[in-house]
Length: 346
Image (cartoon, rainbow, N blue to C red; front, top):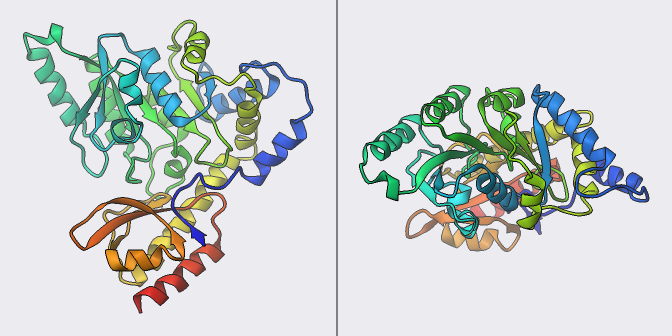
């Protein structure tokens, strides 16, 4: 069976596993105070060109989103996100569970538009009843988006300008950050993101780690006693060496970026394979996730040999599926997909 349903179904990249095995017998302190966590922080600061960045390692993406939003907002504030955003759709209400409303706005191809955010804020602050309403305190974006699309530098800077005008924080979900940064269509760099955003995270779970994310506060804005707040929310590992060691490995010899580049290149080839067999796409994704449209009868045949993710209904006879590449995807996998598509569409 060929597996293309997600980018986190295999374990860790061999270089990460090697580092975990090499350090396994060492006696290290917990809760992010070990030497490998410190080394990882130093490497991330250097990669971000942000020497004052404050960095905490958190167990997973949903936990990171919930922690970042809850720690950064007052109790009367909510977070603006696209209706298709991960925090809006795929986190089981985790943000609302922290007591903060997700303020959903309409986006395009998974992206918020700065003008839409500005218009919302203008209407909000013109409302005489706003004291009884949820104040917008943050804008949430992801890079890439849920649809694999990318913000340009100009688009992200425009959203940041609105945030400054209305005293909101800009938070970037980087669960798949490496795939976005290594896309041929990206004009953003890691230092750009650190400069533009108030906080963001570098995803490990979907980019070669067993688990874990690195949450980066860029403006000396990590809330006081953050460690205690993170622990109270169940997002801090006592044996946090597991995270520190992995990020130390990911930011050694550009491994994080090599994984992103490898996956995006194979996703481009996968896209070409689907196109060559006559498949259309919901949209053009320049990253590791692709969204072909497939007739339902053919989808049943495809799923006999390939695991893919159902994304959404396209019409009464077609569905949109998601296929994703990752560190473990190979050229042989793409060749096998080509062969299978040839069989079912002939």
